[in-house]
Amino acid sequence: MSQANDHDLSPAVTLLMAVACGAMVANLYYAQTLIEQIGPDIGLSPGFAGTIVTLTQVGYALGLAFIVPLSDLVENKRLILIATAGAVLGSVGIAFAQGPVTFLAAALVTGVCSVGVQVLVPLAAKLSSQARQGRTIGLVMSGLLTGIMLARPVASFVAGLAGWRAMFFLSAGITALVGVALLTMLPARRPESTLRYGALLASSIDLLRRYPVLRLRAAYQALLFIAFNMFWTAAPIVLTQQFGLGANGVALFALAGAGGALIAPVAGWLADRGLARSTTFGGLMLLTLSFLASDMVVAAGSLIAFGVSAVLIDAAVQLNQISGQRIIFALDPNAGGRINAAYMTIVFLFGATGSVIGSASVSFGGWALTSLIGAAIGGAGVALFVLFDRQRPANP
Picture 1 (cartoon, helix red, strand yellow):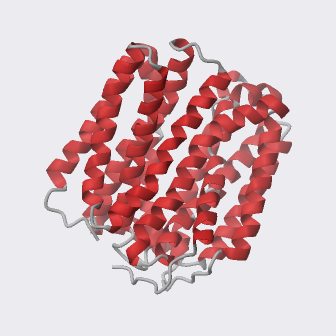
Picture 2 (spheres, one colour; picture 1 turned 90 degrees about the horizontal axis):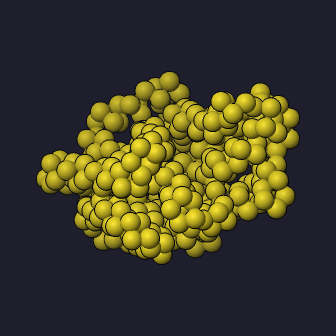
């Protein structure tokens, strides 16, 4: 059990950490809606245009595995500021890139350095008192989800007004401002670990072996993240083909979907009251039922109800994420970075398959097939919960 701090993070610092998480994680998603503009401009053939997004995601996965564990060895504020500076340089490199090699190298750097967000989250938990730890995680994670949800529509709007390069100049500016604010306001935290770097990386794997609850929580969130990515890959296709929306309409729909981030502080509040396990079950059931309902509302042609489904699916992901992180960060007071690295690497690697599933399912069977798969994923999570979480003392 982590030792509680005598003082909580101030509301201003908590808000800053939430904004920083949103600004950094958004770097992973800006290019997804701009591929058709970026590819021809940098001389990348249509067959390889997908590497624009892939390289950023690969960089993020590498950062999760090799940089985030350093937060248990290196002073956290310094590590976050270095990562933030790297993300700024990566975004500037993307904006100035004239050829595919330069662009893809800058995209890789941006992805690697965007993992500063995964150092901020356990740091927020560590610096918060035990009584408010769940709420603090919830507030910071609400910024992260908002960044994910706003990145695509903002990129579409900015690129439509000033071109795709303007989006990455803007991103560099926002990230730089966040870095200055973090330099000024973020508390320092020096970890107590004396492990060497190699042993530190190896211990991330050992933590998965030692803590069954960490494996279980990673499995829950991996399933929900698959469903999340599947939904937001397939939904724009459905909105265009069945509801007749254009690019701006799809962007507005995504903005509405970001409302699911509002549930994060509530999830944290519930976790702080010993209801993390119940919150997890509620999140899994909400995802399952929301996907089932989405099939009916799409068939009925109700755009508003489909938007409500999007909000509920996003909320389900947040309910499980916050309750899960409240639990795993309490496992070892000196291993928050490694625990988060192991957890998020599993979530990210499996979750990335959701985009492939979403595009394939909507292509072969329309939204009816996509919603059925989403409900089945939620059902698999419920089954895991019933089979393996009944007797586990999950609440910290």
